[in-house]
Length: 336
Image (cartoon, rainbow, N blue to C red):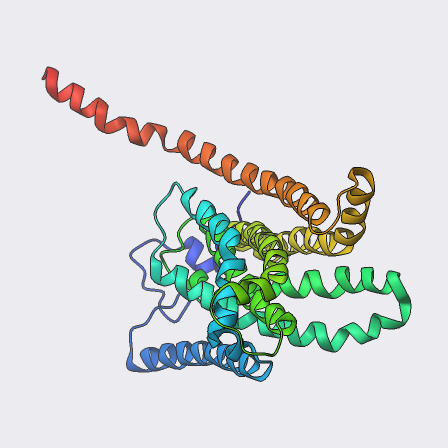
């Protein structure tokens, strides 16, 4: 049951004829009210701008900006992002309420690129703390740092802008913008991985480039859709939280916990899972890895699809009467 807005006893007992401004209710009326509102919105906007500014400086500092503006890296990054783009586009197409504006989609994608740098710094700084624990340390690192940190920063990309926009007007919008944030994260992560793996020698934009970077590009192409799925799940719960303000905190935490857990589980199992598939099938190279990723992401994709379909079904059921009323009115008019 949704919690209603708390009301002062005076407001509850009063009728509509009583003016309770500055007594038990408040609205912008005076010049001081307007000034207070401007200061508040300026402070809130400045905080968001500060976060974005720091994220951009980190992008430059860790070499991300140079990576995404380099022609060779750019070509391989675009190729590596194709599966993730397709998945994000599919999530976008499932929105039955309204089409999301391009400006919000692009802004969320770019913010996903920027906020990813917070994760890059935190992961790098915190990983040595788990280094002395061997394999168990890496598993703990995935579950305590990588999963939670990366899912939080992707959700931050949605929260900074799209979440506050009036056009974010349905729970399912959270999944759409979460997918876009995940796509932005995947793009910059792919660019950085490809930069580290690509030979330093200059390569032409042709066969030599694909030959030198094809392997890492293929690997990153398979890793990208996972980011879209994880953050679409967390984003769905962010959308649910927006329309249930009395339960906002626990709902957001639930979404992050689910996304962080499945993200960390992938990181912790992809190596051994691929090895097991290779041992069972006799396949080598990228083939076992591809099979494992398809199985894992396919399972989680079905979970996400189930959430989306549940919303779509509820939407059509809830709006069925409203959609049939025009037809009924037309029939009544015809027989008058």
